[in-house]
Each structure stands twice: as C-alpha cells, then as structure tokens.
Length: 347
Image (cartoon, rainbow, N blue to C red; front, side, top):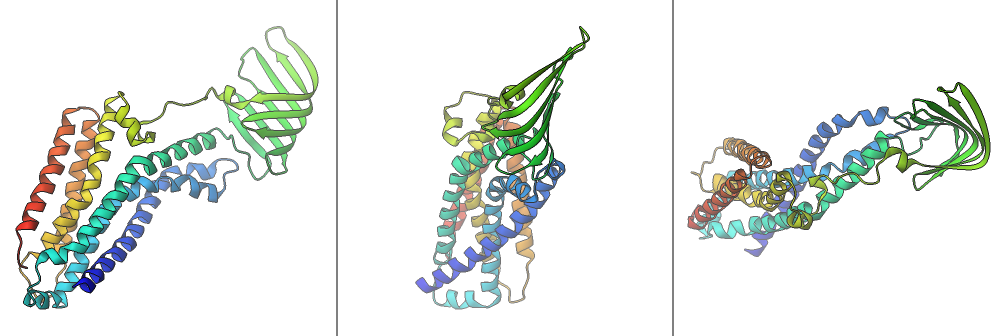
C-alpha cells in the first residue's frame, strides 16, 4: 500500500506543479501588462522589465497554489475512478483515509510553503519591486545608449556618451527647479556612484531672471546628491512590504491589521480546497462513464469561495469587524470538511 500512496503522491505533485506554473504564467502576463510603461522608459531593457515584473509572481503563486493543488488532486482521483482502480481498492477493503494520506502530506507541504511566502518571501518581493519601480520612474539608472538618464522636477541630466559602469562623457545638465534662476552645466566626464553624480572638467552657467544677469563658473569637480534632489531618503513602507512579525508588532492602520490576519488564514485555503476536492470526487456515486462534471463544479465552487474570502479580506481593511467573519468562514469550512472526511469509511 505504500507504493500506491507514493504513486498518488507524485501524480498529484507533478500535476500541481505543472498547473501552478501554467496558471501563474497566465496571471503574470495579465499583471505585467499593467507595467508596459516601463519599456517606454528611456534606457530600460526588456531583461530589466522581466526582473521588475517577476517580483509580482510571489503573491500570484500564493493565490494559485491552493487552487492548483485542489484541481490536480481532483483530476488524479477522477482518473483513478475512470480506470476502475477504486473498485479494486474497495474490494481489498482499503478505506478512503489511506487514499487521502498522500493528499494530506501535500497539504502540509503547501501550507508550510504558503506561510513562508506570507511571512518573508512576499514582503521581500514587494520591497524589491517598489525600490526598482522608484528607480525606473525617476530614471536613476543609466541607459545603454546616450540620452537623458535622469529627470525629476525640473532637474535633467543628458549624456552624449555612455562608457559603461556608470561613466559618461559630454554631460549636459539643466537645473530649473528655482523659477528665478536656471543653472546649466557642461562637463567632459561624469560618473554616478551611490546616487551621487560627480562632474569633472566643466563649467556652470547661472541665468538670473530677476536681475537679468548671467554668470559662469569653471570647475574641476562638482557633485550632486540625487537623493536630496528627489527628496526620497526613504518612502513610507507599504503594508504589503512588511514581514509578518513586523505586522504583528505594528499598531498601524486598519489595512495593516487586516493584512496580518489575511496572511494567517490564507494558507489554510489549501486544506479547505483539497479536502473539498477529495469529498467531491471520491464520495459521490461511482460511475463507469467518464465525466468531468464534478471537476468543473469543484472549480466553480473554489472560485466562488476564494472570491468571497478576498471580498471579506478587503472589507476588513475598512471595517475591523470583518476580520472575525473571515476567521469564521475559514474555521467553519475547515472544521466541517475535516468532520465529513473523517466520517467517510467507504467509497
């Protein structure tokens, strides 16, 4: 019987992996299409766009994985029914609990992975995503070819040559942040290090619109701290960028509180969906005729349940009373499925 459990385990596992990859890719394509503006940004390569949008996959996987496990187990168990193997197992006196053991093992593995994702992986991915998004929006990184590589709030830097490793040649800078004065800089060389722009061998021209005068200053070295210009030492951290322990210790907004409880309950969806799949497929009247109607009904049931769950989770960000409702929904569903699964003794 151990060999049978191993067969079921690996069949469900590989089916879940393939379906999770496929569904995640489809969802990633839809999500990444919202950030196509990145490709239009000066100097942003397609590889950087892929890196930028890949950070979205952490949250996508956490949503897809419970569904993928449930649907994969349903298809595997359905194939066992259609191939008449369940009749042989029933004749041998094998209980549904033995068939359920491989699925329970996978539920435990997936649940642990989801908790790890919610606690660390997803917040880390969001931090990297926000950081890269901020750099791309403000053109902090230099391009592969010459052109504008930094522009923000009236301050623009142009480079005719880019020699790699953040070294530029023939730089032209326009600083028009002050409406009364405009500064222009010409430099033969320039480099960016730790968000500090250092100019070498150039001149600065000051145009004073109030006094109608101009002045020229030559320099060998001149530095600009780009972080001060952006006034962005550190942006306020978003709730989804905080690790689970930070959310637990935080006494912040209702959104942070709701997100913490969502991270606690959402991994349990893997057990709810998978047990529902087991009851839906293996405890219904057996039929020799192949039919995937139960699998389709299972998919619609999972989608409806998850839609309700996320609706309540979003409502909890505005009204804390919905947090308890989410616990009731998840707790009652899981307890009911465990009770009915334990009550089944025969197929």
